[in-house]
Image 1: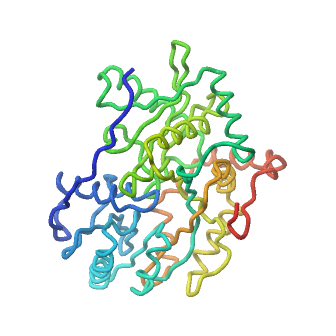
Image 2 (image 1 turned 90 degrees about the vertical axis):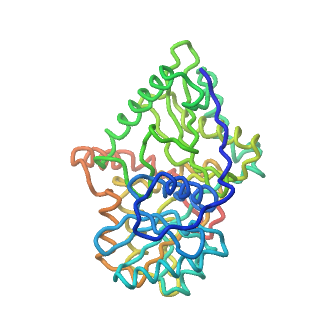
Length: 390
């Protein structure tokens, strides 16, 4: 099977911005994708190009934001997609539009660099989690900290599991159709066991093999002639290709033990050879959110804390932290910024946009029962250090 993919170069120029409200045309989509690739700074930045987003284009500078609107609530993921010098003007135009239309603006996953800007614009800022970032420039995979990861890799290699990259542009139609069908099967099998009826929306990418664009797809498969795919990983680019986000990853329910850490480890090593600087393992919601920030939202802060502590059967943030910590990342704070203030209305709108409470009752009960049965073993899960030095 042909493998490999070439990273597309970002557009060298971005044409003049369009007026907000015009339809999103093919060239608009290309410009938006290029902005997300070049200027996106968090794991969800490349999701700006998802088909469910509306786009606000700046009039005076090259820049945009992608959002989902629910009545008067505007939910923005991916941050301010613009050069640093253009961000104040882009934000000023968004605020002017929101004030004129009496809208509530909510930014998700903002970095520390953007906090002074949004605070000056009257946003209420609340920490709501931390993004796990693996520094590939310094990572050697040696020593005791990576012992568990090396064991998973060794086990999978003994079972003749190999990792390869799949690029539909370099495969025959028949080869790609076979791979795509297998990936859909794996994805549906996993989703069938989750409490949610469908994929979580907005802050997680849709599993869509019809439009990979600059994304990269890797699979872990048996090397025994049959070539059964055990799991797959879809990577999204940001920061001009110097960082890749491990945003969508799934495995078979009966996959070889260690398939996902092995797959991720192999891809990280591959990216190191390409001189990629870092990998994002995405957000751990609610991580170290207990300490209030000046002027933050107690509603948002305590909602994240309570959800993390008591509702793991809906979204297992503790298990998520334990798994990601095995890669020894550094954790970077991410923020929710709302203008003028977070209310029950805007919070409930966000829950609806995510679809996280669109639940299958049977799966929810089974998940809760499983958590109770495994309560003793879960006591050994990694616990975050309060000072962030994990």
